Image (cartoon, rainbow, N blue to C red; front, side):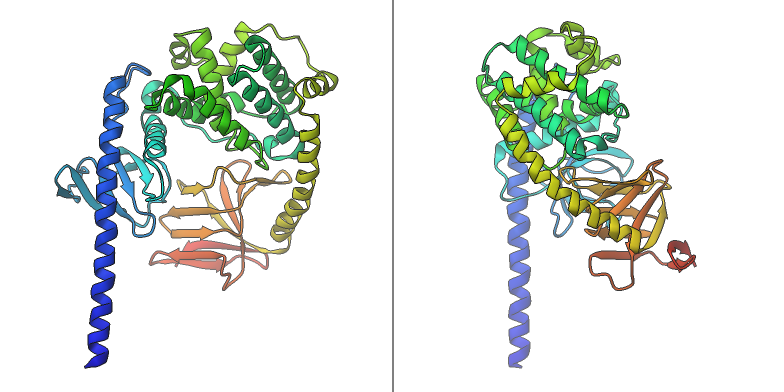
Length: 419
């Protein structure tokens, strides 16, 4: 009897704690949604010609509980005042993103009780821009800028960012700083010709620009906030998936001052880089000596040397990651519409010409779900995901739907197939 009472009390305690967390989530989300709507109403769709406020959900990453601003089209949410509550299905990957759910495009943000109100509003604006970006005329794309995760590419991005930081805090001539930042960019893009920097900058950078632009803080502080984000970003090991979060807002605010209607040109296919270069007289070519001189001018030489030494150590780590793939058996998953999420701030590793290795990833599809922090390689043609595979690997969680199993193809290769 005593054990039964103890177990009952423990269950009641857990239930009460869960309810308290849910109540806190609902209160905080209701406040955040009201603030977000106020910001969107103040813009009235003026910035991009589209209203940002629309289907929006917060998701608790621990329980998948949903708090939304409207009912979904299947009618499965439970209304609680102005809120709608439910559960996000397991097959949907959790991320701050825009996603298709019940036949509708939603803004999705992970609920974090430690996040402050301004940061939450910023994130809601960013992800809501992604929700409507197709309507604006800017198709979503993935970054093809792996050169920014090798040492030379990363160092050249750091130099461009340092110049942009000085530009934003108005440390010298703005026109000269812009010219010099674009000089570094031209050299980098000439040295690494296979890239989509300027297009990915529109995809991710314009979302971040919009978040800063509409953020309800004093206008005179915004460039300083962006400069502070750039300064923090100088510590990154690589920038393949993250550089646009820094360059996009910086160049966007520069364009605000240069060409007030520049966003109209973006909507018909121009990029921020195109518009800036059209206004800045750059030389036909930029060589290494030009870049070395710019590093000295902006007192960046010592910092870049230190970063170079630090990134050399990363080369050994990259070699170990590649060796893990070389020596392991492979689980291959064809990319037939698989959904996947990853950390955009992570350093990527190029695996010869075969593909690119992401450190952490969650994949979901008809087969079930896979979560790993042991590396996933996406082939260069995006046709396949490859994981190092061994039975009982604690770094990989594989949950297969009924009817699916892992089948050995040969001594090196495994695949997921219907039984």
